[in-house]
Image 1 (tube, rainbow, N blue to C red):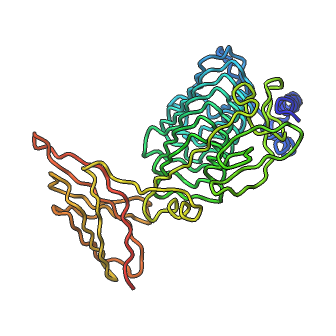
Image 2: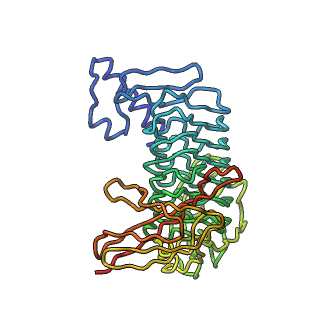
Length: 419
């Protein structure tokens, strides 16, 4: 059943029950249709249909004129299918004033073919499954805060003009990337992940032939296989082609030439829908006939000893270590350990007259200051035997007026005490 039909039936049943004086949710309906019963509903002057669901003000529809759409600050989320298949919206802005529990629901902007930019100005909880899938004109996505619970599967897949996805603050939290979030984005060249990025799951960056480099944060886990660099519809390594549409299965080709079979959705201009077909997923106006796209190899930037390094080695993916180009950041760490102490040394930062050493606190989950030292050396004592500890160091210099200036924070240094 089509999404619009499902939503219409759910709203009809909801209205009927409300008219009968039934104001409590019916599990069979909410489970079958994924729509909770609304206690009240309104349509704003800008065309936002807002329903109060479980005490939250959720946008469930839109009747406005499109163009630049700004989500009202006094809302708690965007429901399933709320804007799906809308051809008039050209940009989306979520204000910084929404609560951190705000969410963009599953399929919320699915197949909005005119949408070009998405900007989330504050921190939100999540972006749902297939939320922006098939937005063929989408070019940039910017998050200015955290997405604490992460981004759902296929959320930005098949956005064939998407070029850049960025988190403006490196300190932001991204709960993780579910499977195939950015799959089939032929123009994607840049993805900036924040430091606190959770797990990245399989198929996330497949069919992204122009994404030649990606930095993976130090503590990010990579789960599953086939995360980077596959191409669908290939008869040989590094090509893209369409099929004749007779129901045959397409093949993906790994960097080493091995193949596996997939059935892929086909977008057709006539139906403006994605359907199961023997052909690869493409926009017939942009990637028609036997047009080929060269799959460039990707190079990952990783931290030594990280899960990303492990993944790259196991899967034959090129990688390089992250280098610290900021001279104010302590680097070149060495460590010596005993059963009860760790001694750290590092390269001196030019002009530094003080260093602050931080140690990770397991109880609070944060780094807290351990000691101030004048020289690039610190002994941390009173530790437990055979236990891993983590440290960071910040250098302080003085400017021309004698004011103390904080430098950048070092990478995390891990040390395990002896038995």
